[in-house]
Image (tube, rainbow, N blue to C red; front, side):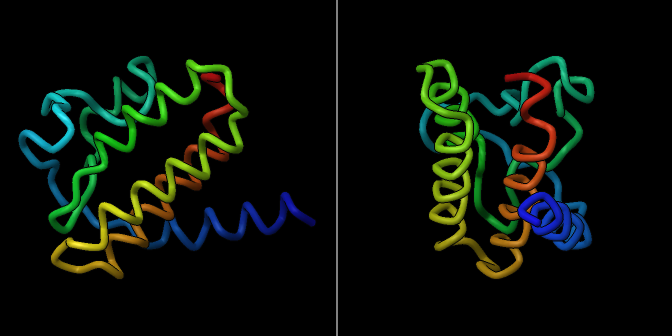
Length: 117
């Protein structure tokens, strides 16, 4: 049942796709070229938006990578990843749409992140 709910969440989040372009230089000292996701996934994910609506998810991605590298559980790191992205959305131009994108990134991390963990 839990897997079904996760798949449904992912489907809902994926339906909210918005082709917003990635922002240049962001907070937290993250370089503009640092994509979210592992460097070997989807060409390094360089063509995916790295946030949206004025929010930059790259610091959240860097924190997520560091969390995973620390040996903490993947589920805990993924929850913190989602929380950081939602916080980044609080001051975006369209917080609701930004949170939908954060949901999509979270769902992607939960569904496909195990391949790289």
